[in-house]
Length: 428
Image (cartoon, rainbow, N blue to C red; front, side, top):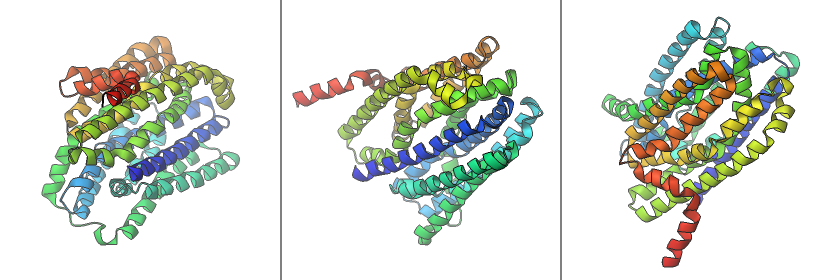
């Protein structure tokens, strides 16, 4: 468990640095561009991030499982992952650009087309999954951290010397491309004997078929997460997007730790499951859920108390409404944090359809609630839509099927798990 813990620390540290620097850049950016331009930038980069998540999401945990447990040669697995990513990236790019041309407004489709090149660039960081499966997250984490720091400096220089929307979008893409290429090159150096192999079509088809539920789930999940920005852009325009995005950028910082930690410790969870250590496996699940719940409560309370001064200090008076949005979004923390554990349990148990079900519920609710609430409440209504869809997708869905009831029960008991653990220990 020591290597898993170290792996988790590296993953969390990298996420804190990269997301933190992105947040700091957003704070600096709002000082030099108009509210409308910040809204356009936020929409374009949100669409690109959505595209990256769709392209990679269905394959992440499944590929780690294959690298960890499969008897298929690793180079064959990686070649298949590359091919599936390439196809997904091209499809996602074309769909998003066409959507932006038709629905997002004449001033946003070109920025979106530029930002979405990042989706194509991220194809090259597929070898990161090999490092994750070997509990060597330190390597890609260092690469992403150094790249983020360097490009943060470049962005700050651009703010001082050439503060235009086009420059910031190009730098957004270049950061993704540079990190991906360095990860790919490092993989070729660290694993020279098993870099890539000729693709085996039968295995590629099976992997794509197995990944389909997770890919659709990833699509539904990202629709749920990004529905607010997309719907606000369509119904209210870039100014309202900017108000929501300012709070959303801050709330993303709140979700970093549990997501990164569970991604890094996932191989250990798989080992416990495959080795038949059921008691330790379930104890790890219960502890992870309880810890995630209490961490989420602490983060939510602190955020609610400090929302006003934080937004005023970081963004200025013109973003005052963002503090209300941030307070509302903080309500999701306990549920989002526990969902980081839930998502890994789904893959470990092989009930991949459950991931599709939960994210589909979240996506439908997110879109429906946004459409219903935005006309009257704007960004605040969109924040409440996010809360409703997040609670449903992260917790309530567990009680819809027999296979997921156990995790629903574990989540329900998460607040009292420390007490229950003490009682179990006393009983021996």
